[in-house]
Length: 340
Image (spheres, one colour):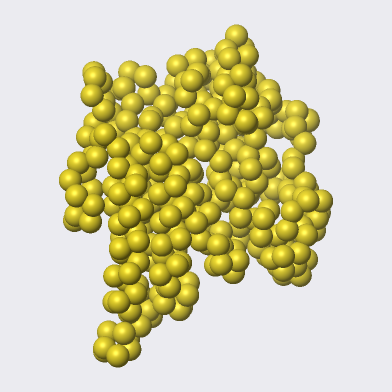
């Protein structure tokens, strides 16, 4: 055994993972891809025909959801989570994704772990016709405990500068349209894990409350992408908010212009059973639930009332449930829950 292997870095395993990753990356190449798979840098062209193309970039991770995936020995789902979360983050600006890069850091990772994560990333990239332009896998014993890992990703999208959404078009009288989430998505897992595994004492294969699913199934549900739900009507929307860490209030307020207050009607939807279970079992206040979790709302569109039917139809065609959950009124930029 080499000295490097004795120190905790398996070069042979890294090469095996690299070969499988190379095949996954090659399967995501698009007409915009340039250069070779495995090069030092990833290259992608700007789509032709754009007048003032503006790049939209975002970097994010999936938080402690990776701990649930590691215990369940399911790795591809968090790869999909990473891509879909990132797609939504640039979608709110009206951007189309064109390239993605991932970063996996850990220690003592097996080939199946690394390759499984990248398989999920590649699958999500293909579903968005986006190139997985490259990435990095770093084995760092001493910094990570053996078998643990974290992952992050950077997405590149593009939008015509004069068509980018910033929220400045939002006006009083606009409607808030909620888009259903598939579960926790990628936020609130530190609290959720504490409630499920410590307070409730459940295991991954145990049923979770009234969800009709096991703990693993409920907690590893893939973060939904709203790209196909929104893009057909993107030019009719005044703003979009991706509901991630900070919940509805913390994210919707980020797109409100001066003179606009968002009023959310919590009676307009019933939080899915997963959130009810977490609140009851964890004895979590409603205010904290709203701060930590998405409560079944993965995305909120702000749009004029006459555009609502088209937006709902586009989402329905993508299999996503939507509902009117409030409106925009005159006031200082803030999010207020009605009757609370």
